[in-house]
Length: 257
Image (cartoon, rainbow, N blue to C red; front, side, top):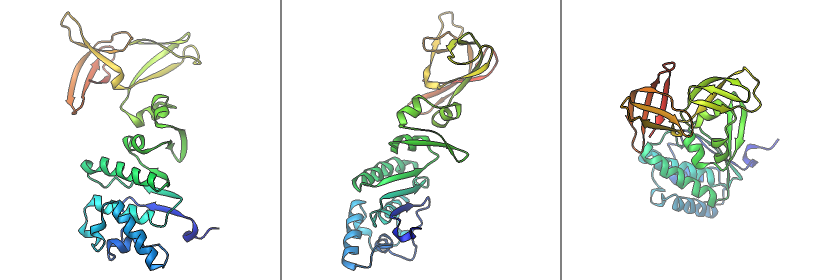
């Protein structure tokens, strides 16, 4: 067995886990060799890099959440680990700070040439930071790959739902097609007569207003129109989410516009 001090693994905790009785510089120096000159150089180098050189003598409680996160990053990087384990390190940050600090952290980690294993329950964070994503369920990896591939070729319904809202349409296989209120969908490899689910993201649906004035139809692009009644529309900044009650079964169908 390899003793803990020789494993060359860094760790960032969800709550940063800084030592409250130690100053910032002492927190960063924790775990470094006892060579005082080398220690001082490394601490100074890292605090300069994370923009906290002026706070070396401060205590953790005197810092903001974002500043504490940077200290925790500097401390984890100080021994020059070969791999960094990060346990949801951004979850405690204000939303306004999170994006900037994530990007800065990623830049620093790449500069330090450190491999990272990041645990997160935030799909946006996984897509934004990862070169490779392993999607886990019940302790098992259900899909692994580049963010683009996992998003555009998900393994199953749950994989789709992790990264975005979904609409689910149920239908029955006839030949190699699934018959639904939205028209036919290809279902290669599925046996005749099987009940299946078609999963569609809200952004892949278009809303049209018919000329008769009867109201909007949520329409799958290149598909068959299906009629519904608008139940709710929510403005969300860069887009709006419109919810329909579908005429054919009353189910809720979501469309982003």
